[in-house]
Amino acid sequence: MRGLTIAGVACLAFAACSEETPPPVAEEQAVIAPIGATGDADEALPPVDCTQINAVFAAFNELAPFASLGAGPPIAPANAACKVAEAKAAVPGGPVIHALNCTLYSSGALDRAANATPAKEAFVEARRQLDACLPADWTSRDGSVNEVDATEAMIYESTADVQRAMTASSYTYPVQLKKAWVEDGAASGWRVTLDFQKEAGGQ
Image (tube, rainbow, N blue to C red; front, side, top):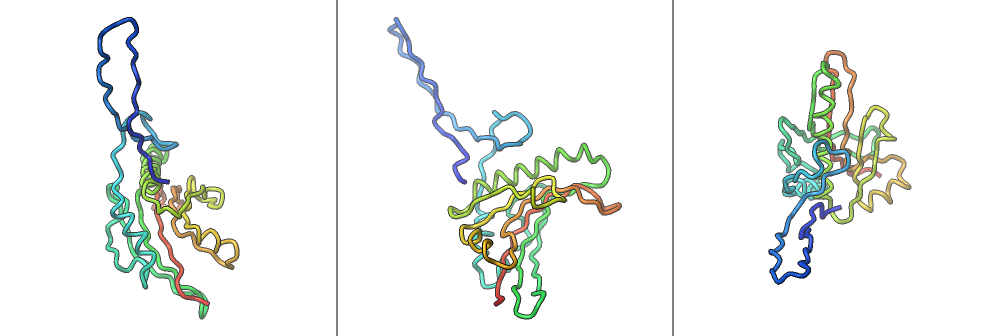
């Protein structure tokens, strides 16, 4: 999932029937634009700093997952906001769900078509950063088919999570990135959300 950059892309020029020495070929470093990104695919994208995202994945293993994290988002677009939450078990002895819920983009109810573009850009950029920083034993899959209210969704899981999902009676996505149009009266609008979730306890 890492290695979104390619380096040393070069063309070899051969000078036929000439004694001139070919000029040195400069090495270029480009960033591959993610599928679905807007704009020129040849436009170089900034490198991804994985420091904050790595800290969130490390926080999965805390005694109280994510409790050590502040409100700063692991992916930092303008106006992003995160909060640590805890959902108590619905039944005695059931698991507690610890979460870090981030809103990466939010629009108003007006100009739905126009605001679809920045919502898409926020989703694509978040996906690019997650793909660059995903731990070695994690994979991603398209979750859109399972989210009827979402225009787009990506699920990220570790190998252990995938195996657990096959036999568990209930399953919470460890990481979900979602872009959706939310119908909520005057509060309707595009939402791009990123949720990190960990079940703890239970029998």
